Image (tube, rainbow, N blue to C red; front, side, top):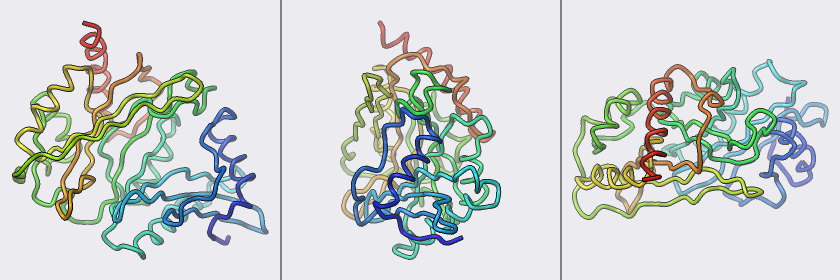
Length: 293
């Protein structure tokens, strides 16, 4: 099996694989030449494409993994693990300190994507992003946008490198199930950086959730999160090291606000995220009531 760089000549077959995996309404196809910083790979055997995987360049030290697709003919022989390792190898060869994130899909009952990251990619999961991408597998999800988990490559050192997260009391218990280290460091001084707002993805008038990334290492962080919780935003994920201001590195907490009711039975997570899913399901119902007042 040969692994090589993707070219646009591969796009028709890869797009067909994407549609077969995520449903024929899948709207996120490869229709233009990807940026040079991105890493897109295909595996082929006898000139037939067997797998596709990509890593999107986010910043100088952050890559996001996505769209790992194995053709049904070639599943069950370790190809998914090989593609995970090949992407990581390419990224690390460019920057050994790169923070690599991934968003495993949650529609699969077998949770194969999550298990693949945990077992073979050495990732640690830090949250759930509910109802993010519309029109993925409408045969399974109906009109509910697809949800994802948020995971970060475990580099064998401290995720938060001596920084402490300042969260509202209501979120501290469930956050500690993700990583106890987040409460052991110090808060940062100076002016808190700006938040980042992610508007909902919208496809054919179906909207995903809104997301908000709040700097989490300052005295003001907890109060800021409380303020947005009162506006209907709920805890979604911790984003270690994903904030940067000059040479200063800090952590973010991602909040989400759904566009409507979420059917949590359609969101499947591994056991390590089960307490978070249960907490989010309870909080999301209360948040919708709060938003209507």
